[in-house]
Figure 1 (cartoon, rainbow, N blue to C red):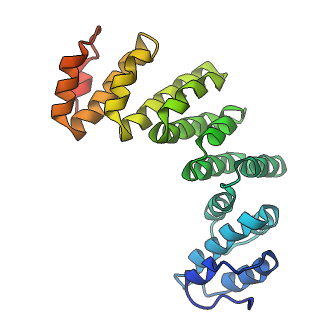
Figure 2: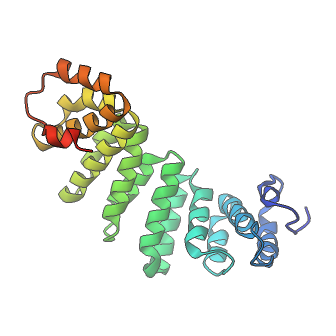
Figure 3: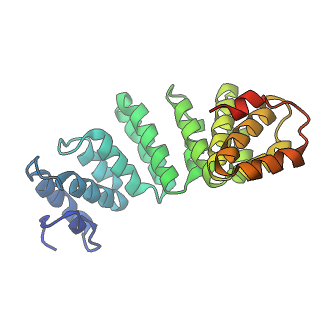
Length: 239
């Protein structure tokens, strides 16, 4: 394959690029005029594909280039590696050790990439294990996405979040994500949550989402549920 980037970003999606070709392909793509609207897409697609085959080399290039913003380069880097969660996590940790000033961005990008790839358990586990101040935000992001995708698996994983404040925030995020995709299921599951604040939060969050989606279903659930507590109807019905 010729080491050139001719044509639109589709060229970068070709399946016949060998790992050894990526440096030259990226150099050629980066040399295109800054005014070329296709340049960022070509660079990012090549970087994503290179990361899938040689993440360490791709990371070195991403951190030493000016063709695209570093934030976009890191997102592409971890998107390319997200199909192999242990390697993605290991790369994030290794790069954070070398570039501690980038640790907040690295953590955000690996969690987001793993979430997009459906590797929610890996994203949540990575976030919960970190002491970095930004890790609290990574944890809520991971559990929000996990709650959207597979809340019944996400719930027991909360026990692995050692910090009580972070675990509380993760529960809120999980419930909020769950309400986005299945508010009826969330409401039906609320009795299994710890009595008190957790149950109230789940009911309020679920009802608000279900009222917006299907007011009749929400009314039917309220009549059927016979709630043993007042969920704060003003909050449930607030715009």
